[in-house]
Image 1 (cartoon, rainbow, N blue to C red):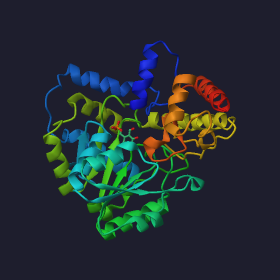
Image 2: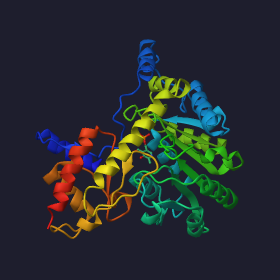
Image 3: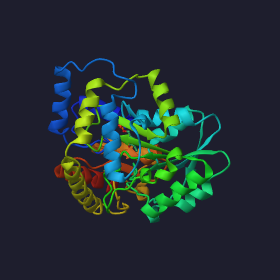
Length: 376
Ligand SMILES: Cc1ncc(COP(=O)(O)O)c(C=O)c1O
């Protein structure tokens, strides 16, 4: 968001930027979803609804998740929220007390850390290795557990590195959490953008339901970032508390967005597959272009729509001491927007979001290359 603000200032001055900063698909929201919202407005579906969302939207959430992952939730265990971020925020406020530890793999999406801290929790950073594509393993999670561990956050595929937890590790982590009485928060924002194979959800391990919270988002799956549509799936006591907390903040998420969400979740999923296919092509295109910049290395992301190149070879050159300085100078001098790795807990990377046109990838990477190799 900070990078976007800085970039917006430059854009307002007429600067032609290549924007690799935005964490959102470049597709338009599919027509049938827009139509459902328009129809709902025309039908005056514009009043308060019950706090966790109308039964039909919760039914659509539950049925989609059951069909895709074999989970088993009732509509009382679903809460529709104004975006996935709010589902996460409310869940952490409900579950995490002062001094509780929350395990968070690095690199992480920055909101996890800040939301944990806002609740008074203590973030336990779990380092991963770039050589192993930042993969999170059950062994590493087990080593990080202490008697104060309240929750573990898993975001697979991840923002920013696109790393995934394998199905075997996921199963072991679910068992670990359940046996030790720890909540496992599964951020499934990018769950349908899992490239190597079958999309998996910890929610399919129904025996562990009491310790699982599924955090879902329609933002990236259906190109709906601005609509603010997300949800939580959790066993009744947690779901009831999420609803109670929501009743004192947003109340229901926007009524006609609920209707749009029903259209998204309950009708054909062809658009999801189309987006996924295009993202894979763009990822491969982006990786091939980046490989032309000497000294820049990059893991192959297995999901989401970011690449997380290591630009460490250029830190120390041209008076640049940090990735933040590098991204800032690259923004002002090469007019390319990236997000510095410090925002995600690592020192030598920048995050590049690749839902842009191939022409923009060509131009942006060309500018990056020229800027970086020109540093002395
Ligand atoms: C990992 C992760 N989780 C959750 C979200 C929240 O998305 P939204 O609030 O738009 O549903 C994002 C958005 O960037 C994200 O990257």
